[in-house]
Amino acid sequence: GPGPLAALVGADLDIPVLGGGRVRHVNLDVAASAPAFTAVAERVARALPYYASVHRGTGYLSQASTAVVDDARVVIARHVGARIDDHVVVTRNTTDALNLLAAAVPGDTVVLDLEHHANLLPWTRRGRRVVVARGTLAATLDALAAELRRTPAALLSVTGASNLTGEVLPLEVLARLAHDHGARFAVDAAQLLPHRRIDLAASGIDYVAFSGHKAYAPFGAGALVGRGDWLDVAPPHLAGGGAVEAVAVDGAEWKRGPERHEAGTPNVIGVAAIAAALAELERLGEPALRAHEAALTGRLHEGLAAIPGVRVLRGFADVDDRLGIATVELERGSVGLVAAALAAEHGISVRAGRFCAHPFFDRIATRANGLRASVGAGTSADDVDRFLDALRRLVASGPAHVYDRTPAGWCP
Ligand code: PMP
Image (cartoon, rainbow, N blue to C red; front, side, top):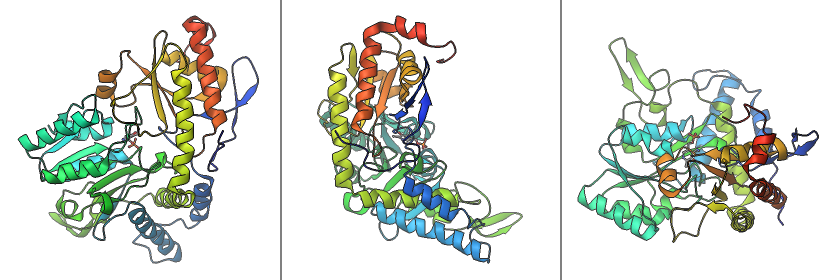
């Protein structure tokens, strides 16, 4: 089976397990945060000495830092196929980017109920509309079209791929659907971008939001890329230095362009890391990445289907295209305890819960919580096999085994 496609920081960590001894850590929680490419760590190490404030200093280091941010904007724009007049706004993460967008939309927005909370709460707290997805994508597209026909909206905002099921949504189709009804189209690409190439200009996507930490870069930086007109007149996302042309005690003249929303000193290192991660994704190439992940995803799903008492969640009966994510529910026992035992006894990291997608989880699951395994460029077939083997044994031995061996307080 395939080995890792790319070198990641921390890929060869040996960690202690219950009962003594150490094992190589298996990270199957890359959908939450993907460890940095080693190429990214090297870029960060090179950028760190040039530590200075941006845009204001005249010194050499300040100019170097400024160039890092400006160059990264160009790399990001190119990577997502931005149009010439699109803005690249540097944000903290996807959540930050979508909150920024939500405050900038001059009208109503429609989202689906399958969204991560980051693409749900910024809208619902403003009273925006949620369409409940159906059991098929075809019926869901019909429902979206009907909703947009009944009451026009300024924006349709949809995830590129579900963080719960990994199911990939047809972005060009959704963009056309939105545009046909006079709306713009935004994509929450937190999950999609690290695994599939996104092209705003070619697909008609108006806005895309993503996070560095899911794309093999460290925490604390993300981006919103898209049409400048709404952003140029929107209330500044943050108020402070760098976002203004001129300030008086009784008012300010706000900049246009990305800086309008980026007050304060930016995450220079985080932005350099994102640019390096995107460059590494381009070097690996989407075809190689997809082939690698498709092999592991097939292995994961086939293995899970063969374990009695384990049910893989899916939202759409007619979507076969999915990222390397599988969320399961167990017929018996607690997924929280199984996840704890996977970590404590086997050195395997997964995630248990409802994955910040409560409405979607509650609609498609029959149990209170699920267990999610996710793979990426740094995952090997051996990682997947170790997980499947451990899960098979934990499920077969029943929850009593887990209760017996899990130290008190290990799991909430
Ligand atoms: N959208 C999706 C689909 C996600 O999976 C996540 C992260 N779990 C987010 C948004 C939020 O990303 P962040 O926490 O980096 O803002």
